[in-house]
Amino acid sequence: MEKIWNESDYDYYGAVFSRKLRQEYNLDVSGTAGDGKTNYFLSSNYLDDKGYAMAQYFKRYGFRANVTSQVTDWLQLGGNMSFSSSKQNLSGASRALDFSTTLTSPWLRNADNTDWVYSEKTGRRMFDYGTYGNNFFGIHVLNNGGDYWDNPNDEGFTNNQRNMISARYFAGIKLPYNLNFKSSISIDNNIYKEFTYGSAVHGPGQQAPYGTSVLTSGGNAGRRNDETRAVTFNNILSWEQDFEHIICQHWLVRNPILEMLLGIMVMVRVLCN
Image 1 (cartoon, rainbow, N blue to C red):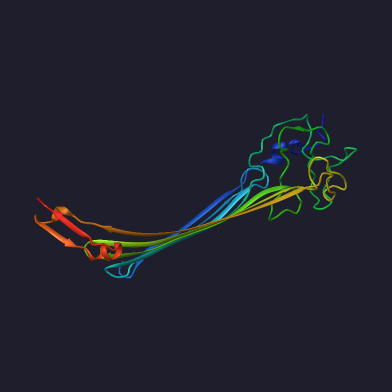
Image 2: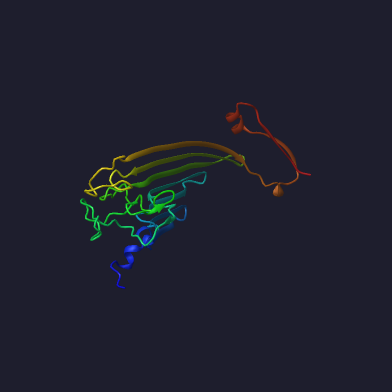
């Protein structure tokens, strides 16, 4: 018996999944300047993971910079900043081929079974969402083959986009009496967007002319925008003293720096036996 269809015409797995290329690139640059008083680090990265199901993918690029400089013997300045931006297509991320069918095709045939049905809009073959008895459980495996940023076939999709920026800056000051003061500020900003679409053209109940006729039930769309911002200030006063090298003596000193900061008289006592 000679087969009328090609083997791929029966392949639901091939219609939903495919092997794709994952690419990731990183570039780092670091060094010192100003007679070793300034250290810097720069990095960038790019990720393109095309996933495994239909239009699924995850793309991200980022940048990071870190600089620390000993400006004087008593003053140190530094900071770092990072930024990343990502786009993701979740269509088919949790898809499972759980269905019952008997030698049917994922592609739709015309009424007299003489040819495939093609979209009037794009010329692509139309998926069969149950016209000839396919019985799927849960989410239909052929749903959501579109993309928010590129959807010429008007298919459903689930996409998200995220932009994150973080910045840290500090100033460190050496004070008398082995005191150190460090002031820092941190800024974090996170913007998240989510886009969903249930096709108004493709799906159970689709009708001729295929690819352009709107479903009786119509379609649906949703969008979510979240933005989170955090600003943190830190002011830390610390005191360091190595008692191992103090000659045995008993003395009492007054600390004007702490008095100025706290508004009270501060005495520091050091004892050594």
